[in-house]
Image (tube, rainbow, N blue to C red; front, side, top):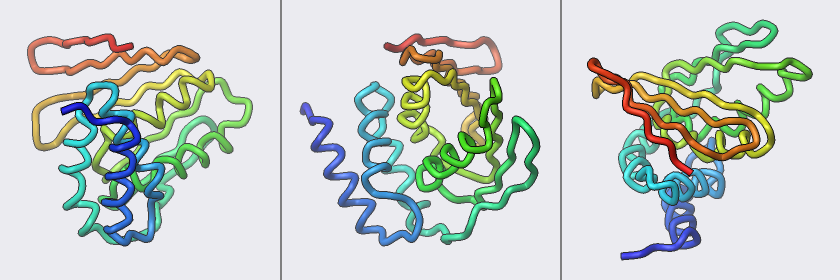
Length: 169
């Protein structure tokens, strides 16, 4: 079955709105899921996997663990990245100012795959982006690299044996 971008956005928007969360914007999260799905990276599956966690997590504020010029470390207290990432990126861009690069370290979060659309948006604005994480439940390491101004995704699984790189346009 072929499903359009608008249909995915509508369904996810309704699903997230029905969760009655204090944090996260339904339209932004719906776009995150749709963009990931349209890129062939199973956005709907990731949202379905995330939903039970999003329903049960507590709406607690993010803590700044440490902050210095060019870097910030945030503790999300087990919350979904999808609910907080747009705010985190806005805050980091303000802190970045005229710096050539800025590091954002996130701890205690889940649903990292849903960061894809926000990173593509940053790349389109001229920022090179790198996101990497280890999946605690599966022995896979994930690395996204988006070149500035070019929305070409280099997606790499790092396993025990060797890296597997998949360029995606």
